[in-house]
Length: 119
Image (cartoon, rainbow, N blue to C red):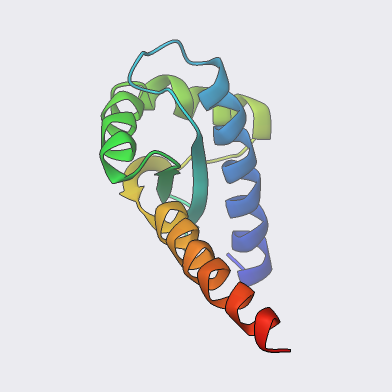
């Protein structure tokens, strides 16, 4: 599969999984969850879905357990909504990128007001 098509399919799967996650009623899939990235293999048979939570990595790990138990439903819905010839097998992975990003923003916020005082 061409590189641009893999990227397009990755973004489409990311968008659809985010929408499906809002519809799920599993109590483990709560809070501010975000699909950070989707890596689709070149033949579109596998996809790694990176999930992050504002509350931290522990919430993301709990959400991954819930998402893993709903993998069949999510995969079926993605296939139906995107009309893919071959719907990839989904593997959910907890990611702490949002938490790290908030820490960096806080550190920058602590540094920048000091610089304004000097000007």
